[in-house]
Image (cartoon, rainbow, N blue to C red; front, side):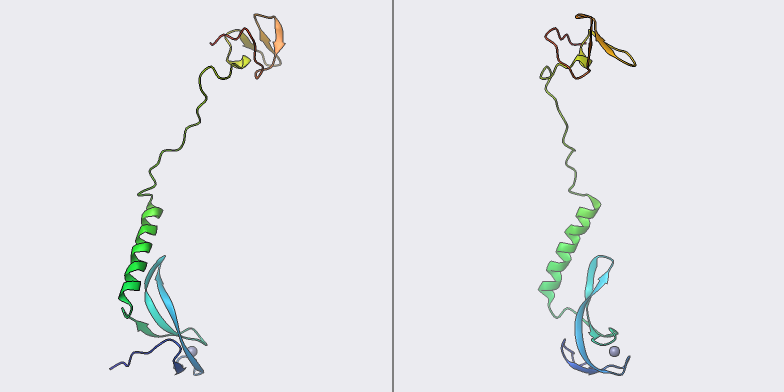
Length: 128
Ligand SMILES: [Zn+2]
């Protein structure tokens, strides 16, 4: 029979031979908590498994790690990326104007026959 050991119990560790005590730690399987064990406080060798002595706690941990897994897989992360929308006609930059002519070194407005900047706006704006 294995008398159930408990965290904090004094221990002569069979691994390192020191007088130490038991420390409870979670046993991880990847990012999931696979269980808990009792480990030597000196050398961290596993002394014994801790099984299902706190079933409800274990269950809630499983649920939360499951939802974390779902989040990692993006199961409920399907929201579309927000669109950048500019309302039509709100901005009338010269670069969008039918009379705007883009040259490599300068831009001209054919209505006013002057040099303009692409981000200028103009009272004579006319959509392309
Ligand atoms: Zn030890």
